[in-house]
Image (tube, rainbow, N blue to C red):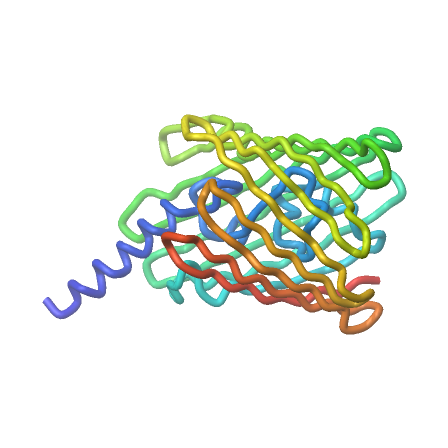
Length: 274
């Protein structure tokens, strides 16, 4: 009888893990950290969302690697995850490989994604991500989720861009059953305001759910220091991010994401560029 609460606790954690995955990455934990995604991705200061905003990979003009850890997700320390990413740049295209893992006594999840972006013209860029996630809770059938995320960004001028992004376009295989749907569609505009300021605003259109919006503001306070604040209504959450270039090659970054119902999810990481 003494082990019953422990079993129930682990089962509850597994249920949360499958139920509160970010809207941008299916019903999983390690696809990406909890983060607010915008259609253009121009306000990003961390590499967390390259998988669901693949055009953002091209924002850096150098090849790089990065690693980050989520110490707890929505206040649950058992949902600690680790991630790694490697990006490669050429004049014509950009690509990235992203991996993530979560291991608990009764729940395991592994995710791998390949993302790519290409400039179709001087003004138009497109990106796509193919991802696979394996999830298994002890005593339950394994889930194999396949997703495709797509994004297009069009620069109206040097200061303004518009974008469209489809999140979870494609098929998700779950044990013997399958279900394919467009989980969320986003339309957004980004504007550089000057003095190191840029803003993203989005309309979010989730499938079979009320529409919402997201807004994110980026401030490049110094050549080596960047801040981002963001808020969205689907789901209701807020976020603060910081990026610091410790040297010409080394970058540090951190995010505090706060879901208004579930709690906080901090993320810290390090990147190396060459």
